[in-house]
Length: 295
Length: 271
Image 1 (cartoon, rainbow over the protein chains, first blue to last red):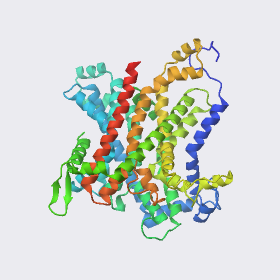
Image 2: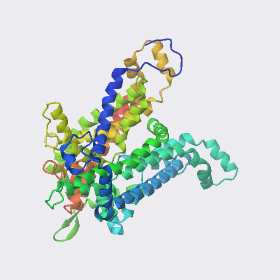
Image 3: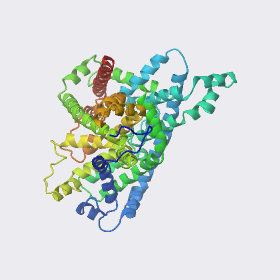
Image 4: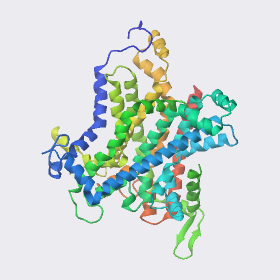
């Protein structure tokens, strides 16, 4: 290493060995996705015969998409809509509530504040499993099992989101500014909506994105609280198709024709989130930096 | 916070009761807990996730750390591509990831088998009983290595650059810098990632549950403690016993997670 280098991050010699080693890791990350894409361009005959990482005979992607969308009177679109509803309302609500709660914990002194912060930290460590069965039983008592509410309500609670926003709000919103707003006669609620929320935006987007992933990919909770396919999200629906494909659902008749449905359906299910992450990179990377580093 | 406290309290409450043929729902004290602690199926599942924890979590976090150091080192062509590319699997639902890998492992589409043929190697049966846990470990690693890489990378970014320059003045090489500056900088992030991975491992459910339909003979209904609790409740209607199993599982998870946290904090103070 040369010693007399100018200050600031200087461009350094790229290492080929390192790039190749990391290239292998990138390949590992992307290979299954490439396989998924290639497979969704195939008809069921070439799906099982050809090489997995290349196109088969003919390009059947659009035929497959058509099949996925039209099967069972377009139940896939219904599942897609459900997932979208759960993700947008659930994640949006979770991000908003986390922001408000984190801001409150960071910026106001009130009795039980320390205890409440400890509860939030503790809640992160509680496995969702321990809550699943009682949640189901509570919901069935209230009579909201098998309705969208049963999926939406638990998604609104995000201890990790509250924790992240508390850390973020402590840094991003200066106390002196809140003081100034108070002196100018602005109410606390108005200050929150007009001033603080703007400063909290990067943290908000981060929590929103991660809550979006959590709800979009949620499987355990909907599996438990829903039984009517009409309300299924994509994850539960796709796995049901898979059971049909492998014949595990009990009918005994293994139908190869379900595989293109499962594979193409899977591809369509991951596109929105991947696109969201690619386009919002700038936001979530800065927000993540704030939350993960400071304790 | 009520949202979390209410089901938790209810779980504890439920776990003290039992549905009897005669007498209906009766209070049975710690009977369900006694049964859970002596339950061979539950213990087997617990050992299984513990083994998983001891192998998969270090492998995944080790890979994530190496990747984070590599991306941060500035010696990589197109680091942004690697950063986002390795992270992408995180956005894939666990159900889809398990289906994909399950198909890849299996003999119906069998990309794994095809690659084996190309290399003239006999690939083992990844959906067989001796390989299943490793196969699930691979799926989980694939999903989360990029996410953990980003958390560690974010921590590395906070190191002020003057520190590296000072170290270089003193004649420190790349490895010395990584060991003495970078590793201490990612300590707290690494502990956080470890704790989250431990919690996730004890809750292992989605991947084995989805892969069950691809290998029904290998993955039993009690393969992981979480699957056991789920099947007890929703296929066996034993809600009370299931609640006890879930509470024990939650307790074990919390103890292990806290132990790791406290141990690492002590180490920090001891320095």
